[in-house]
Length: 207
Ligand SMILES: [Zn+2]
Image 1 (cartoon, rainbow, N blue to C red):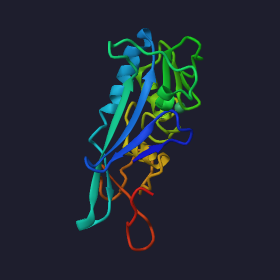
Image 2 (image 1 turned 135 degrees about the horizontal axis):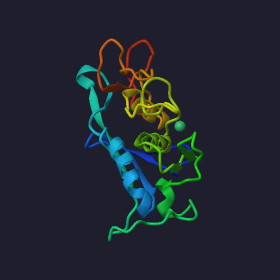
Image 3 (image 1 turned 90 degrees about the horizontal axis):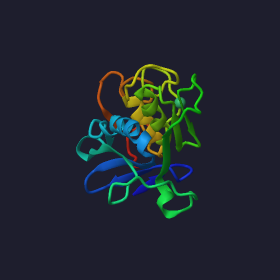
């Protein structure tokens, strides 16, 4: 099952029913000068793989899906950087993001993301800015609290609330969204629960 984001062009969420995984997958077009910075930013997200799970059903019927991140730089089989498709309608453009280091970004902004998929960061920006702009390409807006998605903040932390919000943006029903906190306040956990508040607990699956 593949769930696309609303404009259908910058990332996808792939559910594997057999492996019990939910994978947030995207490709980034970049250039030699920007690739090292981009890779560090992608690594920060990819390292979240396996930390979170999404639970559907309760007790005996509970099923857990491991949440994975698969964010990569677009290269050909020889390792050369691919240039971005000119037309986003091109087949290769379905998960189309661009990243470049650019002096044109205002000093106060450090980084920008246009249309949710074209990222630019200043050469003097901290790596936090790159992690933040990548977050905008996978469905996140700006956050409050203490995490990497706080606009103009200093924290590089990717939190459970960030991951919950990515799933919600992709159409999953999640319980608990408060910023910087655990999905379940009284019981810290990395398990994100699919709850349907109809009085009888959770019944839904991938609504
Ligand atoms: Zn932002």
